[in-house]
Image (cartoon, rainbow over the protein chains, first blue to last red):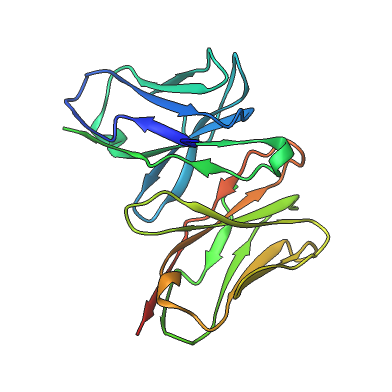
Length: 113
Length: 111
């Protein structure tokens, strides 16, 4: 079991460029989440999904889009990157039957110049 | 709404005890506690459901006071491995767990 994996681990973008972060989980979890973590701010929820084909906005969704076409994958897209999106991005998954314990991926460090 | 954690930072020597608090302005359905070491992902410690139950994991335990809308994490006889940032995640929805995390409490344990 790989758990939750994220691709890529690091990325540097120029302002205005686009990119997609991929999250994959092999635990058959229903719920998946995308967070961003900035110094002193904790983990802030960007978007989440409660099942295949469904997504919803979290606390800080502006500038991001997501898709969950397959149960095991959750994609986070930045259409036009801005320096304010420089952050560490964590994906997580959970299962209702597992008490909704969240399992986090290793994170993606994104820098936007 | 983001829960409030206190204190923001704690510095201890090995063997000392610490308490980290997590308070919410809204009624809580559950509280999760996570620990994150520098450069790593957060790792689940424990979950508490409303009802005031206390949970324990080795020398780390937690309580949940539904009336006061707060939870406390207790670390006894701290070890060097306890160093890291502790986050509480609160759920005010009940059933559909969409957590809101606090800003974290940095814990440093010195030899």
